[in-house]
Length: 161
Image (cartoon, rainbow, N blue to C red):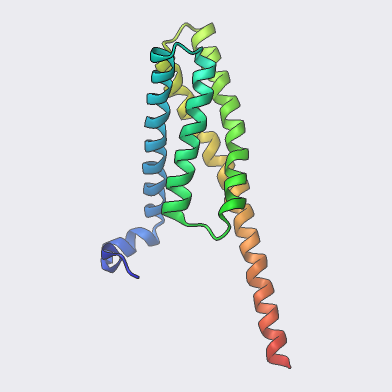
């Protein structure tokens, strides 16, 4: 079923340039970043949790929100379970980087925790983008290519019979 905007010529020109996916990625990432910041603030100010504990909890929830909105709703993968596993594997690295940036920013440089968090989100965005591009979407693309190759070979075999 076609969505109302898919009949728009401008939409198709933008989509062909790859901008739609970039815009979607930025929107989803922005929503997750806001969730991450709000939860960090809540855990620190309301519950008095240590900044590294708060960072870990807010990061896990924000990553889940990011995955759900981005992959399940917007991009709809064929193998969501496999892709979710790969997303969370890349995200574990991003969590470690985020925690390191938070530690250096707060404990060593004396930054306010929200400033350190914003810096860690920028670094995490780069980490996630590169990790997803290299490991997730490449792996998913290779799997899709193998499946299409198998299907093509299977069809050719049927035609020869």
